[in-house]
Image (cartoon, rainbow, N blue to C red):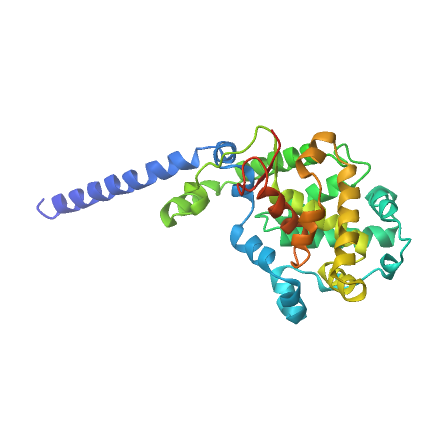
Length: 297
């Protein structure tokens, strides 16, 4: 009996300790990811700052010095180290280049190239689920899609797909338990103030990057070549025309949020991630500066 009592006490203590630990974790696991997205904001939950910040701060000068292996580690696809020489012509039709950015109307070769660009931009965006981001970009650039050219609809569907995927994963609560134990900044991130109507900065940056890469016939390498052959000022003007023609295809309220891009491109031209440098510039000067959102009203 004397031996049994300590065992009973030890077992009871273990059960009590296990219950006290697991109950809060199970409670946390039962909190829908939709609530987390609502409280923290989609951009804060979906995008990994540690990854995207490295890309955003990478300058063109640093990009040129990197090996193919180093670039691939970051998510660049070196097959996109190409450049469309037609862009150098004074009469190059930037508006037509944007009009042709419809996956449903591209030749098989053009579509293959565009899909490679989209894959790269999804990788570089820092998205926790690059495949969902890739699907969203395809949705935006596919003329057969109901969400073609509709930033609001594509972002909304991306959020819904992300929530659905996370909530369907049986081990979701383990991920949340890990976050609470190791102190994930995403769990404790403060809710940032934003306008009633706003677009995610990194999401819009990926849309712009895709347009620039398809328009120039290559990724960051194409921007480097454009600067070398035309100069920084002319390159900035060309990229501004591409981006602005892209923006003109959006809804009126999307256009008002993004606004004029001239100064933004002049700031962004030094960076490898031009799209996010552009949206970072806009975010720094909108209604609620530097909150990670492009704020409307």
